[in-house]
Image 1 (cartoon, helix red, strand yellow):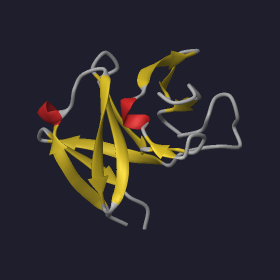
Image 2: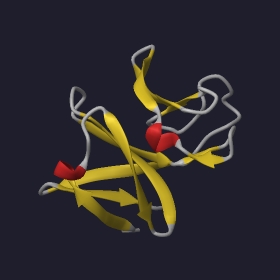
Image 3: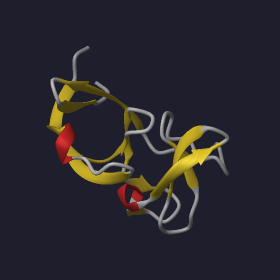
Length: 110
């Protein structure tokens, strides 16, 4: 269905960094990677430290795949899927993101 939620302007995002937004009552970490011309959204909750910190993590890539490193214990989470690189049995939610006329929207599951 159509559960897209308008979050912010693309100009509100910090290039090569993350922000946290409250989307539908959930903390979502949103990352803007201008070199990839991409915006990613994953849950802000780090399942290892049990803290809402992923928006503060360092971003980069592992094997060409975009990731965020938790600022707590440094596990790496795939920005497309939310799956942890070091332990694929652990994941944070990953959300679809779209940019329409300069506005960033996140799709929450029904």
